[in-house]
Length: 106
Length: 169
Image (cartoon, rainbow over all chains, first blue to last red):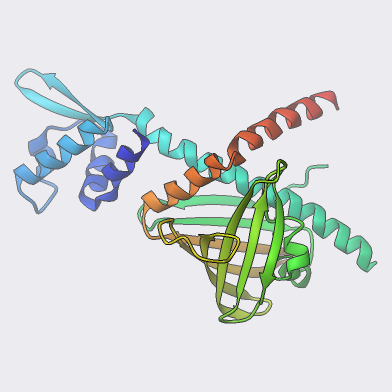
């Protein structure tokens, strides 16, 4: 499941779509206006993003609006946070080592 | 006893980089030594409760560091770092990899490029580490390895312990 998110954001156009709809939900036509690609290509990207549950289509009248799923984006931040913890632990140990070395030098 | 030291951790999901900036309460030369001498690296590089064990190290351009991170139960995870460019005590660049005890690099696992820069900040030193992965998937795979190594589970235990300890103060 997590792998899917990374497939979703691996493509530059999909990343641009995410940025675009982060501000407000948009229709495929409105999204396509921002890119030099065909409406079909945009639809394909939206399909991938939907399958990864990064965006959600919402029917409003005759139009479908695509909305960003913020929680899903947070999953990416979650594992980065775990990475950060590894570095924190590492640096805490380096702090202790430097402290010891400085005392030895005195 | 917590000092207010600079610590930045930034992920650039477009460039596939991690930038880690950390200030240390020591001069640049001493911090450089901790990054580049095996007897010192062995004392801090593996995050708790893992320990670091160097098998061989040759810190020069074209040289390498072959080491293991060892779990308390004795499980070993081997790593191999190639040193590319070295300019004491300003910066060095390297490529990391997963390997085995014989030093054979595991090509199926992601490698990353490291640029480690040392600068002065008053009497302290700041180390900036920029780790570049080929892709976000690589970055994730590396983290996944950490999970398999029990690194994260144990880190969470450490967090719990710290909460208990600070609560007692």
